[in-house]
Image (cartoon, rainbow, N blue to C red; front, side):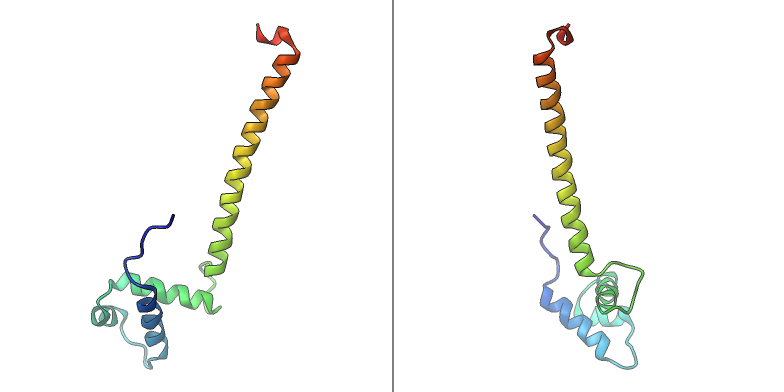
Length: 102
């Protein structure tokens, strides 16, 4: 289960929308103070929104992050299944060959 978020999702979306709609771009630090959030949190939200919009290629999009997490979870499950099968195979091989137990 994911950890609870410090800031509500609506606040994040509103903050990013405000930043992207404002010209000239405001200072992130001042905007963060005005919104009552940590400047690095706001900077991270903005960078993620830019990646999701295809404006940045130095980080994964939200969809790519979700896919990567799902693939990692599936990979872990498959590794556990392989371990179980490997152990069962060794067990049954030992049952068929009594000299292996000695």
